[in-house]
Length: 357
Figure 1 (cartoon, rainbow, N blue to C red):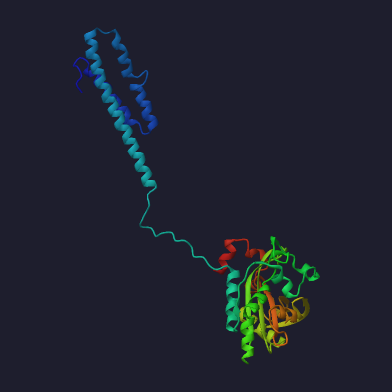
Figure 2: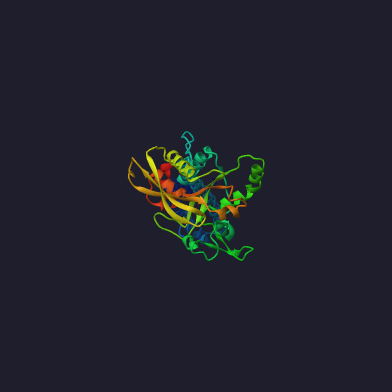
């Protein structure tokens, strides 16, 4: 710093004093306060600059030059300290936000199948081992497949048993489409698709039969602890030349024993009414051991397929007889897993669902 000798001691002291004040500042705010003491409106250098007006011209030049040199030195010290504070803050942030790459990564937890999906897959596997095909069909169904073809024509009183959701769209007969109330329409769809092949087998003198289950989502206007507007059902159908109620009982009993993994249960068939079967029966199950021992629990509707339904399949009811049943997958899952409120399956509570993973 080239400062005239006469002014050097005084101005040098200002530079040293400013450097010391800046060094003591530990925050940007402290630094700005220190800056004001030297470069502010009332700062020491500002006051010196104001005093130049009273000096002679020659001295004013010399004194002004010296003050400018000192001002530059003070500003340099200020900027250096400002940069030092910024570097220190950045270093602090980097240390606070540092990623320790030596730690193991946080892995995403493994998921699992929903309990309804577990029951669904188990049902398909068990009936598959008995020779049943698995069929799938539309959830928005026409009046023909959902009602009429199942011997449940328009204005029939039995339709009140299946309050449902209708779609703002009509079929070729002018009837509204609906969200299917059961998977029973797959009886008609599957049998119709296979009717020609079955007729050809009969013509060749070969054994002919239809054996299929149809699991899927269904919909009815119902909602409480044991019913949901959307629920899951599995429809079963076995048609052949010598299929009887005895086959229904044996088939369903074997299914229940396999599904619940116990032989300590019995079935009961109670007379009932369904428009698409005649005779019809409700199937009740009773466990002989466990928390539900001794209680009769309804698990399915069933019956011998009505001759008119067989005709609607495109088959001869004199040749094809058999049974059908419809079971709630949700109900079976509740019994298997000991769940007492159907709504738990659909609330998405991870604490509940994690038990089945």
